[in-house]
Amino acid sequence: MIFFRLNKTNINNNLNMQNTNRFFSTDLTTQNRVLAVKTLYKFFNNFMCKAKFNTNETYVKLVRESLIPFVIFCKLHSLAKFNSLIDIAVVDTPGKLYRFSVNYYLLSVFSNLRLRITLYTNEVIWIPTLTSLFDNANWYEREAWDTYGVFFLNHPDLRRILMDYGFSGFPFRKDFPLSGFKDLRFQEINKRFKYESVKNVKFRKFKFQNPWWTA
Image (tube, rainbow, N blue to C red; front, side, top):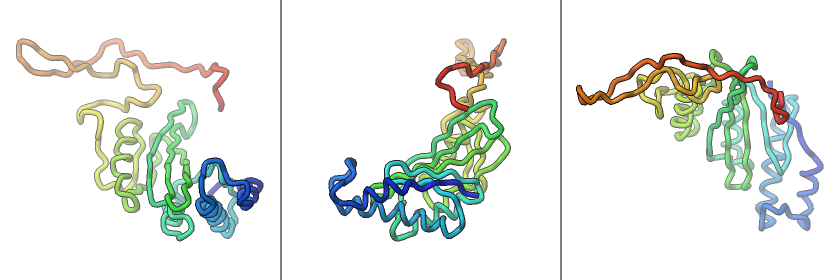
């Protein structure tokens, strides 16, 4: 199931070419941007889905089963043309059932429009890989797996990319101990590096009493 909404006021305002959006310098680019947003809305409206799209912030929240068909449509449709995967970013929120928020950032050079796609998962639920659609998704997904432990199904080479192959755990998780589990030391006698277990490992605890915290 796909959740998104449409801000019709912003789209109608952009149809008036006398009030060109401040982020664009040409009327043609603004027209392409409005066409891209309307195309995305029309596609999902035909599938009886709820949407949130506007020309200032284009944001979509999906479940994993909808990721591949949605990205294929965004990439191949002549009025969307989201041909570039800019980044994949993960946010960890301990205490939630789906603690990981996986964010995909797509760029359409045709309309100068950026699209953010968000999925929610946890340590045991997989996400389909986008390596068949974007080559650079290979390293982005490996980085998400290496640092957060988010598993991408059917990834051709899902292994560590930043941490050492013998590294234990996922360092960007907020419950990961600051000292880690192992310490790398150089032995002057043997002239080699050696891993040693860290004693008195303390995990981080969060009370979430910060006034800026939003559930």
